[in-house]
Image 1 (tube, rainbow, N blue to C red):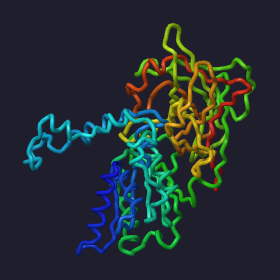
Image 2: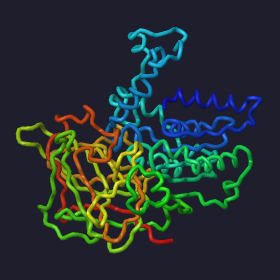
Image 3: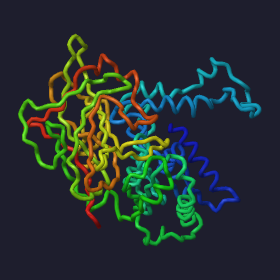
Image 4: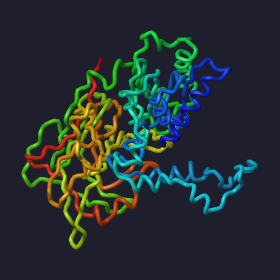
Length: 472
């Protein structure tokens, strides 16, 4: 995702468009890294680029991939060691592929000297305005080619945000958002998904439009609606149960942003609770890495079937105090999870991108990076904008109560009559993270150990804002 990689990608596109065997129009398709790289190169507007289709691929290097709410992700180590380090130029391959490089196998010293370790650099740099991150920034509005952004509702830890935010901010006149479910890899190759992509590319690369892409007859947003408990990693069941629906915009214009208030008895209520000044709920920060402590707030059974589709924000009023004999805490890392329980009391899980069972969605925020830039043109009440600049760093003092709005990644679900939702607030990663956790040395005992508190008194309203969608 470096500047030099994007520059090289742009050169390849311009070269391909200029070949005698080319009609001068280049399209880009791919998932994961091969989607994330498309956003950047399209913003450079290379000659010949005519259409892009990023599938399940992050768009924001800092917010989507490296630092969720400012908290360093540990997935990068897993990914880098397997997908980059193992393939470094000059390193011997396990397979018998013949000579690996012109120079042959390089020494360990040469390999180390040539290596730019992304894991090390991500840990070393904390803010978006440092050169490491700043050099990877670009403006989505500079993308003007036709765009088909395909996002996966199950990609709750790395890519999902990039697809819906990439679509929303791209400057393309012809742009489309399509949502899917299932694992990260398999849907990309499904016959129906391939046909959608081929139809899109035929329209903008060949001038053969059989899908209404160019004449305005195709609505720009194509959602898949998750309804019912169909199990996990069952592609056929998802295809049968989850229906598709076209919409004209994202987020949906008819969204009713509804507050569910946190109550002292750990409920979620649409009514403002009666509270005392001393009301709070607490949990131990950090705790056991494998079993972080958390508190949960549960809604009443829904009185009627309710669709939730779109952006979510949680307002919390939090503080931290030291443990007896422990260090003075300097920060709080907030980990939020929204879970769905059926009327039978069993949790409804969905398919994560490696086939694992996952909840509806998650959100994160480092309290010292809580500053919101309300003057930024991208700021919305349903999506607070944070610059994550070094100048935005704010103090966290023991005992002081701080209000913070936590971005929870967008989701979709139809909650049946009698079902409940549960908001989980914890000190670390809980069930549903898959490979995408935040267990790094950065989250040290010296900085984070203590008791975290959510204050619920009359001066501290805490609530979850859910995007309720009335029938069209």
